[in-house]
Amino acid sequence: MRDGLILVTGGAGFIGSNIVLDLAGAGCRVAVSDRFGASTKWRHLNGALLHDLVHPDGLFVWLDRHRDDLAAIVHMGAISATTETDIDRIVTNNIRLSLDLWGWCATHRIRLVYASSAATYGDGSAGFADDESPAALARLRPLNAYGWSKHVVDRRFLDDVARGCPAPPQWAGLKFFNVYGPNESEKGDMQSVVAKLYPHARDGRPVTLFKSHRPDYPDGGQRRDFVYVKDCVAVVRWLLETPSVSGLFNVGTGEARSFAELVDALFAALGRRAEVRFVDTPVAIRDNYQYFTQAQIRKLRAAGFRRPFHTIEEGVRDYVEHHLARPG
Image 1 (cartoon, helix red, strand yellow):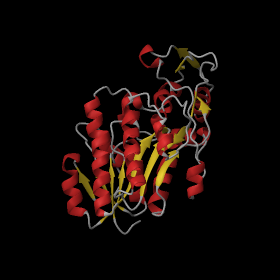
Image 2 (image 1 turned 45 degrees about the horizontal axis):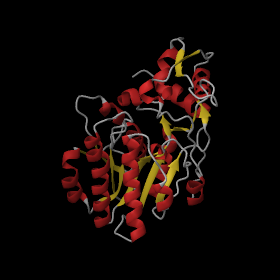
Image 3 (image 1 turned 90 degrees about the vertical axis):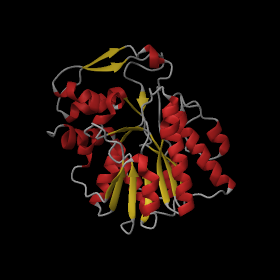
Image 4 (image 1 turned 120 degrees about the vertical axis):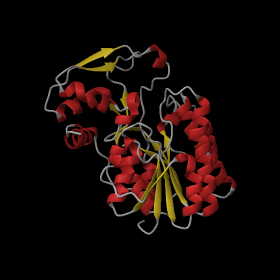
């Protein structure tokens, strides 16, 4: 893995920056492609030895210049807001860029690991199996444009593979579930529940959760597969170290936990008793609100990934003690 250069797109973002820090810490040569503008995302990369920084507008010129030295691309760059309504922007940034990178990697025989999403599963009525068959993928109905964009890409890549079209020598699409952890600050309203509620819990104020609008779920009983970003990084590292493995894989713990349990874990990490008040789910998102997600991870395990995932108690405690509670 250390023999070649690794490019991480979206490398200053949430998951991307954690991947960059891990790879750089392991002695890999890492290049980052991202848009910084006036943001403070550069702080996410503090401490990382970077080989290069690439503006996305010049990405393919840079790729052509470095193709003989490049070992792999880890494509995390995307518009990840589930509330984004500019569909042309999503097509350009999430679909078109991914298809172009796939084609470039296939042509130049460069490995590609990319971010898909559990948002492709929609309301979950078709299950949460990372089945690559055309029939299984055709049954999925994402609830928002972000999830749709990831699903479009997954289906196109799998169709290329099924037809025997040129493909990267290794490719892996990762369907990330509800990820939380360090370097979320630039995500704004898309930050995890842990990050949003931490300041309230730290200051001894009650935290707020959405009420349930379904009789089969109590308030706070909505269940998600919450996965710590360090586990997501471990999956990416394993794939880069295991070039024989390709496919579409869920990345989650395999166990759905309630928002109430997540809040309990947060307050426990702070040594406090949980105080929660419930508010109505906003009407604008109520119809598309997911009440249950749970990754099936048998396929990932069968492929050889053996490392255990953090429980929410373990992950939240590590996040609070080693990141959120530290100044700066």
